[in-house]
Image 1 (tube, rainbow, N blue to C red):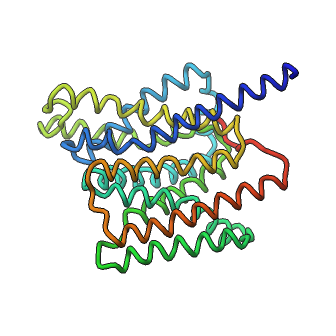
Image 2 (cartoon, rainbow, N blue to C red):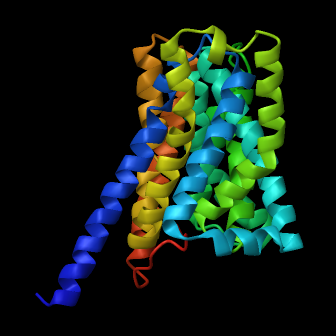
Amino acid sequence: MSKQSTDATAEARSGVIAGLIAYTLWGVFPVYFKLVESVSPLEVLAHRIVWAVFFGGLIILLRRQWTEVWRALTHRQMLQWLILAAILITVNWLTYIWAIQNDRIFETSLGYYINPLMYVVVGVVFFSDRLRRPQLLAVILAAIGVTVLATSGDNVPYVALVLGTTFTAYGVIRKKVVIGAMPGLFIETIVLFPFALTWLLWLINSDASMFVAGDSRISVLLLLAGPITVIPLMCFAIAARRVTLTTIGFMQFLAPTLQFCTGLYYGEALTTAHLICFGFIWLAVFIFSADAIRSSKKKPPQAAPAEA
């Protein structure tokens, strides 16, 4: 085996490991938000933004990406898109935190299961993509599953729909804007930073912040909100550059599967409607993934077009 081939194999292996780390961390996120469930969702969100700025800034410094950050900040159109992305990710994060703290983990899992299928729909509606038959079948099955849950007499799965739609829209914007994953997230958090910091200072001044009024364990956990936001994204960015789109496509279903398992661990009620809904979703995922494998064999392998 040539040195070049060996290097490529090692790079692909490290990419897979990085991707598994990213999706595993995203999958067990509910555990973290359960640990800080005594803190209001808005305060948790504010800590996530504020500490992500400081931790992200350190990563940008170490990776020498300030030039890319400055280029985006001085490019009016790019900055406008990133501001819109920041708004979408704020809605996504707040909904997710609220859902975990209110025992709706199954719905968060559902939201991220249907997210890849929503990308397919967006491609058809806005970018004139053509659906292959298996893709169409997968979308129909997912729609049936969500409809069953929505009409079962339980609550309409609006958490899943909000998470799925906001993250899909966020993903479309980030694909449109030519900027690395880490610089992009850093700018998004900078945009949100003044609002988050102002909210935290108001809470502290009003003696309503769990960061200063809570026990030391809660304070440490809130400080960790920055690293747990940034580290999975960095790992994903490494994976996206080193492995194929098909591999990334498979790994993206790991996170909602782990979220589903955490819902079981925390004893959330798994109704018949949930079982039927997830049955349709899992069948859709299987068909979607099988089609991705088959189509990838018909064209040369290509790495995912993301940057760190």
